[in-house]
Image (cartoon, rainbow, N blue to C red; front, side):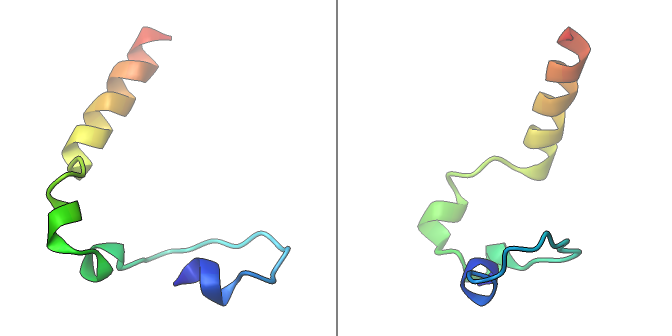
Length: 49
């Protein structure tokens, strides 16, 4: 939705909230990592540097 609404904008924006998970089909949701998985991966990657 954000891409469509802002497609012609060339100015930087910030998005404070999004509801992508409500729009996503269930069969795709189950294939995505959880927030906890993403945070753990980022923490691991930062610790390695």
